[in-house]
Amino acid sequence: MQDYPSIFNDAIGPVMRGPSSSHCAAALRIGRLARDLMDGDLRHVLVEFDPTGALATTHKTQGSDMGLCGGLLGWDATDERLASSVQAIAEAGIEVVFRVTEIGASHPNTYRLTLRNADETHVLSALSTGGGMIEVIEIDGARVSIRGDTYETLLYVRGDPGSLVQALATWIEADAILGHAGAGSDFVEVKAQRFLTDELCTRAGTAFEILQIRTLSPVLPVLSRQNLRVPFITCDEMTAYNDDKGLLLWELACCYESARGNLTHEQVLSQMQETVRIMQSAIRQGIAGTDYADRILGQQSEGFRRALADGKLLDGGILNQMVLYVTALMEVKSAMGVFVAAPTAGACGGLPGACLGAVDAMGLDVTEAAKAMLAAGLVGVFIAAQATFAAEVAGCQAECGAGSAMAAAALVTLARGTAAQAVSAASMALQNILGLICDPVANRVEVPCLGRNVMAASNALACANMALAGYDAIVPLDEVIETMLRVGESLPSALRCTALGGLSVTRASREIEARLNRGAEGR
Image (tube, rainbow, N blue to C red):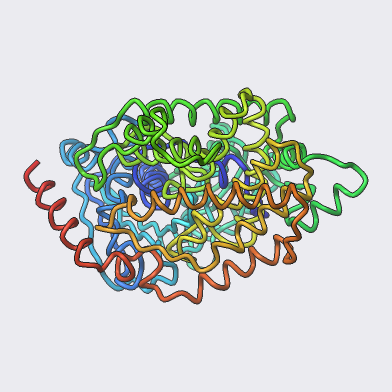
């Protein structure tokens, strides 16, 4: 099955709580799939992280433990109990042990879970690939690729799984994908738009010695399917597609997402309107005030709002509204409120803050906001398809840099610019943030994240106006995206969200981390 990013899966989402999408939301999704693999019956879970990866140093402070335990309990990413999930899973009688040990991981965000109950043991390995996206890569020693966007039925069989595959091929619906996971596997995997029916499972059990059947529910909002086709997957392909159409970027986004998600254009726009409303609610909550013990910064947005209202700030025009909204969103994230990772939790302020700040300053409505966010989402699709949103892979340029490029396209769309202008703005914005490192202070996603989200919005505004004025981006967006990944992979691992370099290792950072850790021990 071809993996095509979805605007709502990969670029504008998930809707979540927690400090980090690649840690908390992704871990929760992995936990949900692990729970399904055990049919909800868990007694002991060993979670292993490789010492060379990012999770070895960040799993506790950035929400991996919290998210994973929430998922193992079957909770949703917006569950208000999420902050207490580690305690709740212990109270549920499930022992969860976290261990840093050599597991030979090649990806910095690799989880290996050994799951046990009184009757069985399963081992699941999974990756957090950025922005809350995941991939289960191994179950019980067999290679798989489960991204949480299909209904998965696993049939454990005694004997040769290949014979069961051949039989199922004549029984199941044409839109399903099946196969066994290679040499040494003892299960057959069926990916489809729905689980195998009871009738088919009974038929398989009659013809073969089926030991057990496990069903893993999707954890993503937009499902994949057999023979999925999209009109384009790169910016160059989109430009060629639009040659004789003259569509705006948000309209092209509707073309893409309707094909990707089997939705009408009206459904795509309506879904984005609902997403925008969640963002607007988070902004209101942030400005009203947030409070949370385990964070570095107290509320900053109220002071900015007062200073703006009192005329004490330099005249930044529309930018001051953006800074206020960016700050409010980042504070909601840090206070475990509900927000939209767009494209990630660490970069959740730049794009929505810039876009919705401009929307309110311009007196536009939720429909115009949704169109702008769709344009941003399509730029995000190109980034997800050709590069990454994971700071652990490519530094903060993959988070705040990507968010800034997406925001630039959104702002051009609000100004009724062309698709070519929106893409040009995105290219310039991403060029300006190449090489940005990820070095969280005190191992929390707050500092310098807040300032970098503000920078992302500021950069987006400047590049949008430059594109609208006819500035030449020179380097096409696709080539800038490819460059971002290449630059990111060349960064030392200490500068890719491991808390081992940059501002993370300053004396101030160490002192703040020690203070917060003491506070946590006292609670």
